[in-house]
Image (cartoon, rainbow, N blue to C red; front, side, top):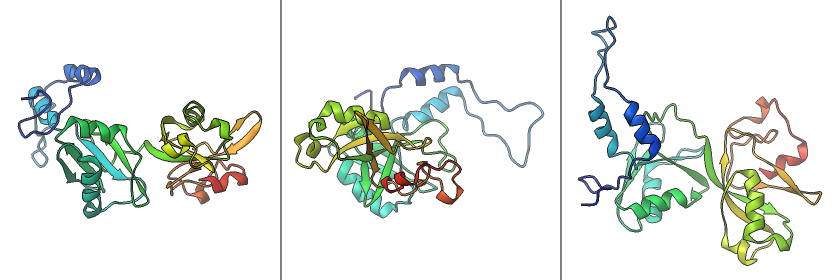
Length: 248
């Protein structure tokens, strides 16, 4: 049997160095003396038990709609079509419109992590690895992979090196789309970028003194004044120049 699969056949990745170090620091649960409450007793687990419990979920992915709720009956067929290329997958719905996804095959798991941006209708799907202590009510979406358009880029810059360098100013650039690399569409360059949603989104950049704007497709909850995701414009305390508003 493959060492990366549990008894049910779900893919389980090997622990990384950070997980190993954390596991070595972990101790058995204990109930502090004098704090016993018969109306709310504490459930205790050993270190070995906790490691065993988490093992089957180590390669689960947390999926949710970015800024919008995605119903299970729409998400499930979409993910099976997009992600189950080599084997099956299982989707578990959680509270607060979060979903846990497990895979049969390593190839499908890795493709779901490295691919994207994933979009259902006009809503981005945020995809993150499950982690110890995950709580769907308190978890904050700090980043997301999105499509970015770079209008009016000079023709000579429609290449991998130039577009990825521009995208690197916006976030972690992932890949340039084929139409951009082939020059089939030159109204704008298109690139997928993992953006930090806790920081203002960049709205423009310069090349040889000329100013160019950036367009973010499918991000609806962006303050038009400061570029921050998830903030209402009327509550903004960091306004940008009015001319940048139409580019989000």
